[in-house]
Length: 271
Image (cartoon, rainbow, N blue to C red):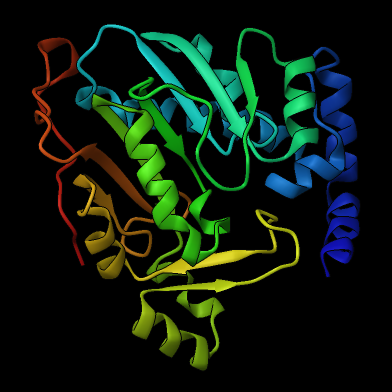
């Protein structure tokens, strides 16, 4: 099914992708197989949506970050769709991208300068020091991590996040229940998390779904939930996925400076 989906995507976007290459000859594009693994096989969307997403994510986090300049980790960076745009944004001091896929990390290192790309194992720990990052982005990563392996990753992300830092995660919540069979929905309601397994760990065909209420309880063992956006009620927040903005429990709350504006996105778990 995955090979068939790849062929259909290649055919669907062939003309547009040729046009993009001719109009942007200097833009580094990952191999089609790697792009398909992490995103849709659409060069223009990879470039434009990646840039827009990088801007949107930092805008969401900005008022919750206290330092003038930030060290950022994109956990599960894939082929750099978001990561490649982060160094150009205001207040960013350093950018690190981490992924379990050696081919993707190799391509990133060869084609996206100015970013520290690291190959990490499928299970923690990572090689990063404790408290290394002001901001950690995990966009559509837990969606491909087995449910029984997520607690260890949450512990590791807590370890490498600065005490005053922010962690942004996305999960497949209520908006994705329609993809589940009736039996799977009952399992999700019972267990709070459900994984459709796949022989290759971390592959796009491995898919994990979360009940937001259950995941909220899991998160609050380690973090304060500063912002929650339900993907069903607010599909633009993270492409239909639930969006979670987290701070280490017991740390100082956000106090926006005049330069960052007065408003906050709100916090807590909403229906």
